[in-house]
Image 1 (cartoon, rainbow, N blue to C red):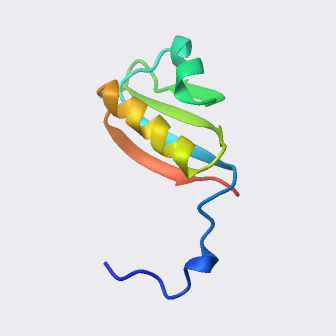
Image 2 (spheres, rainbow, N blue to C red):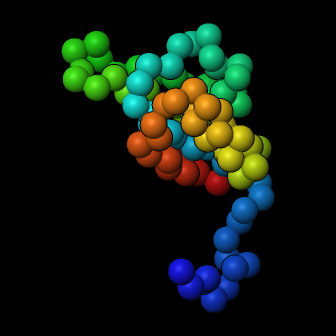
Length: 86
């Protein structure tokens, strides 16, 4: 992969809001361990594959990395990561 010509155009540092969709159910009890994710929305019980949408502000990309590592350790396949703002 060729790196972009102007890396200064990318902000790898400050806080941003992310939406992360995982396959599986995540309990509200995990909120503290999930790096400040404020919104934890499970899919409908009728869905074939349960999915959970997490959304919240993280301090930087290191925090995002830590959250993704936690989800991996919980054996929750990550289906989507979207930067909502910032």
